[in-house]
Length: 306
Image 1 (cartoon, helix red, strand yellow):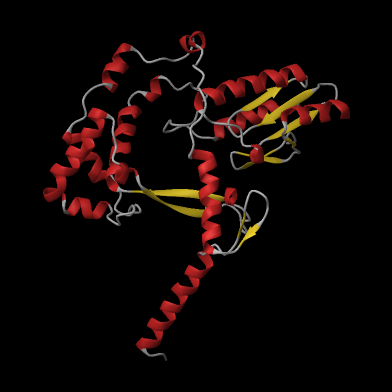
Image 2 (cartoon, rainbow, N blue to C red; image 1 turned 45 degrees about the vertical axis):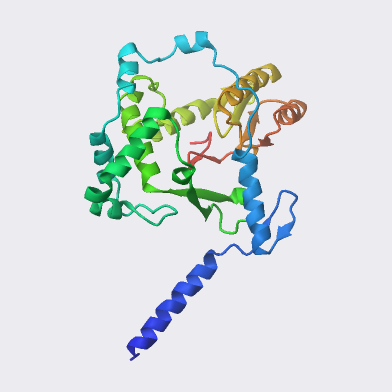
């Protein structure tokens, strides 16, 4: 038998050891130099995210109007619905449906506190949120967040192998959820049937079935084939350089219009039925690594074999 004090001590020690396991003790910078000091590790992560988010981009290309007009667009009714004024009723409704188990933001106040103190703080919180919808300006303090770094792999070596999870404060969470609720009424009318993102009830399995069907004849030697597995877009094409060039041009236009770019670490090019010279030319032109089957798509194994 152990005394109560011993149990408390063991519990404290267990929590301390668990916290130590979560500490990042070393990291590699962009030049593969290992950093061990706390300040150096911090600088590596700060610089990594500054390169991604912390500087202005060049001029953004406009979307091609003729292409947009042939797709799903907002009707006048949709536009009027989106432009309707936000109300205090929406603010309270959203605030009270946010789960109390959600992580609090930098101020340490979570959903449970806001619900318990709503009669006292409701007027200030509601006014702050509605003011944002009125003038489009957000206080820097409201926009502040804490970022938790979750390892993507068992032994992460560099900053890109950590997944950032933001812990926003409640005012920010409530504001974004109000916007999402408004958009949910419109999105089903403009998202294509073959898209699964943003649509409740649609599953990724539909995409997997389509991809397996595409790969059914992929490895035939008499049929030159090329497939590009890109983090933003998947493309299947005949194995010609001109076809690959058109895909890359489309990706570049998409990138210049949205600010999103293909992640080379997660992108591959798969070729079949072509000679070695063509294979190397495609690889050199795209800068993607050569992929091999079986691979993983949407987290599931993918192969041209049954």
